[in-house]
Length: 104
Image 1 (spheres, rainbow, N blue to C red):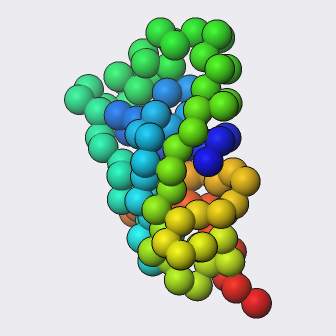
Image 2 (tube, rainbow, N blue to C red):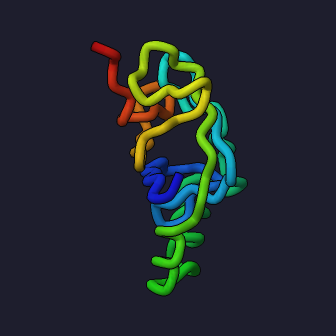
């Protein structure tokens, strides 16, 4: 999937709101199970974003596979996400896929 947008404040795979994990896993409840906290926390996240610079837009075409266990999501296609793009955000307790949409 291209254009996986990640707004986590402290993840090793997140650089300038792009996920570099290559493959991520989303639980049945929509939680991102692939989040790895950075050594150095939020401050290290800020430095990673600054170091990436403005030329990092090439990541818009970075292909990430999204394994999804959310059987109630309309984008789940045999365990893989079929959405054109997803947005992942920090929640109060967990990092979640905000694109998850219940089947009709």
